[in-house]
Length: 445
Image 1 (cartoon, rainbow, N blue to C red):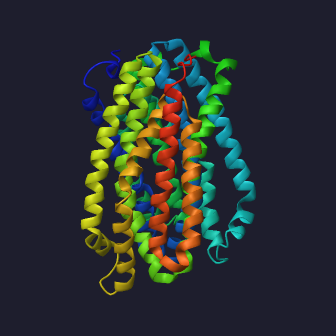
Image 2: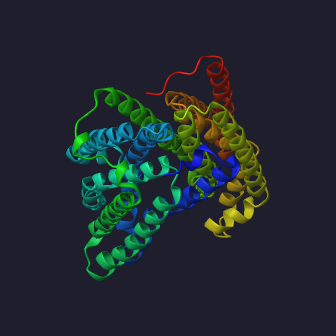
C-alpha cells in the first residue's frame, strides 16, 4: 500500500487529514445531544438532569480511553512509516489485550464504587436511581467504546481519517434511530438510551474492523502474533497512559474551573455554559489540525524523514495560526450573536457576561491553536510526556487565577486566566522544542 504521508504536498495532506477529523469531532459531540433531546422529550426533567450528571462521569471515561488510543496511534504510525508490518501487528495485539484488560478493570472498579461516587459528587437522591440505571449499561459497555477508538486510531495511523469518520456518522445515525425506538416506542426508559449508545459503538467498531480486513488484512494480528511482546508492553503503556492523562487532565481542569464559575451566580453560570459550547466548536478546528499533524509527523519520524517532519511542523503552524486568527476575529465580532443562539433576549445580564468573556479570550485564542499543533508534534516524535506537562501547567495556572480573580473580575477572570495559562503553555513548549532540537535523534524501536 502506498504510504501517502511520506511524499507529496504537505499542506494539502494536512488539510486532507484534518477535515474528516473535524467532522468526526462534531459528530462525537452529537451522541450526548441526541440522548439528551430524546430523554427530555419522552422521560421528563428528572431523567434529563440525570443524563447530565451521568454524562460528566461517562465523558471522563471516554477521555481516558480516547487518550490511551491516541498514544497507541503514535506507535502504530511510526511503525507504519518505517514499513515494519510485523511490528505493527505485534503492537496491535499488545494494544488489544492490554487496553481491553485495563478497560474491563476500570469499568468493574467504578461499577463497584458507583453509589459512593454519586454521593460524593452530591448527586440529588431522587436522581441516583436514574443515573445508576444509565451508567450500568454505559460503563458495562465501555469495551465497545475502546474497540471503536482503537480501530479508528489504527486507521488514522495509516493516514485514513475518512473511513473512521464515515463509520462514526453511521453510528450517530443508528444511535438516533435506536434511541427513539428504545425510549420513545418501547418505553425502556433511561437504560434504553444507554443501550442505544453502546450498540451504536459496537456497530462502528465492527464496521472499522471489516473495513480494515478488506483494505489490508496484513495490518491485523494473526495467531502468530497472539503473544505479548515484552519490548512493546512498556512502550504501549507509557504512550497510552501519558496520552490518557493528557486528555483527562483537560477535562478535570474544566471541572475545577466550573467550581470557580459556580460562585458567580446563575447569570455567570448560564453565560459560561453558553461560551463553552461556542468554544467547543472553535476548539474542534485546532484539535483536528493537531491530530492530523501528529499522524503526519509520526509516519515520517518512523521513516526517519526528519526534513519532512520539520517542514510538517512549519506548515502545520502556518495553518493553525491562520485558522486561529480567523476564529479569534469571528469570536470577537460575533460574540453577541453567538450568545443569542443559546440564551434568550431576556437574559441580558448573562449575555453581557458571555460577550465580555468571548471578546477577552479571543485576544489569546491563536495560542490555543498553536498549543494543539505543538502537542501533535511532540506526540508524533514520541515525546508524549511533554504535552501532559504543558497541559498540567496550563490547567494549574488557569484554575488558580480563576479562583483568585473571580470575585473581582467575574467571568472575565476565567478568560484572562485561560489566556495566561496558554501563554505559559506556549513558552514551555517552545523551550522544549529548542531543547530537543539540540539533542541527537533517539532511535525508533
